[in-house]
Amino acid sequence: MALEEIRKAKLEKLENIKKAGIDPYPAESFRSHRVSEALENFDQLSESGEKIILTGRLMSLREHGSSTFGDLKDESDKIQLFLKKDIVGDKDYDFFVENFDIGDFIEANGVLIKTKVGEQTLEIQSYRMLTKTLLPLPEKWHGLQDVEERFRKRHLDLIFNQEAKEKFKLRFKIIQRIREYFLKAGAIEVETPILQIIPGGALAKPFKTHLNTLDLDLYLRVAPELFLKRLLIGGFEKVFEIGRNFRNEGIDRDHNPEFTMLEAYFAYKDYNWLMEFTEDLFIYLNKDFKKPFKREKFIELLKKETGLDYDNDTEKDFKKFAEKSGIKVEKEMTKANLADEIFKKLIKPKLINPTFVIDHPVDLSPLAKKISDKNVARFQLIAGGFELTNAFSELNDPIDQKERFEEQKKLKGDEVHPYDKDFLEALEYGMPPAAGIGIGIDRLVMFLTNSANLKEIIFFPIMKPRDG
Image: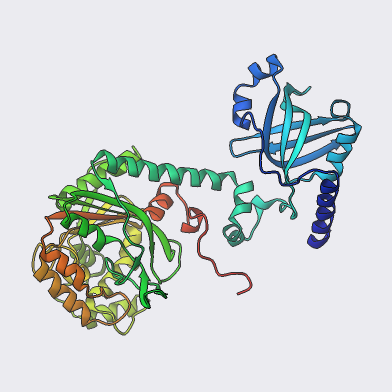
């Protein structure tokens, strides 16, 4: 039967329900137990003969003469239903069979029994419609070959795909554990603006919008960094934020334009302390991690893996190597950009065991404190081929920061840090020495759940519509 014909039949059933004086979308329900609670306490409830009320979605219906079996599913579990004409009466039995469909949400009132084959079952004594559905659930959804359709219609994926649902539950547990860890460390959870006049805090292309009331161009934040640092200037010593960032860049297995990030800043600490703090965080999340994680200097790792000498080879040398390696080279790329792109494409995928890549070139890190004329106190934690964290000893010298912003102004392209005079002014009031870290929550969850793509662990990833 074509989809429109099915929908038409369902609309007729909806009218039947209304004509019977029944509200097909009531505002309240009277559930006494979740399905999991009914199953956990089955023996006690069954022996007492206590009436219970379960609610959920009908996942199957099987008629056998004057009886109907079905499966009722709520968020917690699934249970078999048994509807018998002798118990509910001819009229109510026929009404159910004629007007209730797989996919409808119902309320079932009855007692728990075991069938002849020993299956735990709710024997229905009365029922109510809670939501009449107008579209049929797709058959064999779990076996659907079009994986992208699962991401476009996540609501259907979650109905049938228990593995996907469990991944999302684990995602929220991971976020909860991270939050617990930072709170135990004495950090305060804060909120900073998502709409920003200057999209600072990262080298990334922003999304632009416009505020009509003030006739003001604004940007969705690429990072909360510069606002969190203002809180250090204002006297807070340990702050963190878990929230959404937005970057108008590519989409692939580990990039989505809208993503969840944790950023945290600790006054009077440096990146060496922060590396140990990060190791302990990962062990807190998964006991399989062991300290210490390996440490590799960015420039030395680059030379070891590619032969490129960052201090002595020219931008032309880097460009030639990148082109020879099949890496797309943009006209405005600097030597630092090229080195970073080569690292991402050729070296990062090889770093499977947790590795701190440290001490990056100065011109690649305009917000990090220098440890020499050429390098900054920065680390990235790479594991499973993914960059999971990015961290610095934070630059708090306003003169040095101004010079770095001036250098960024000379560069072209999307990944240039904007000049932020308000932040420079704030910095001149004094920011204590500090260490800061950003953790990509989506990538971390992807790594910990052994998922192949970010879309697996983001409820509603950005997707191009089927109709274009």
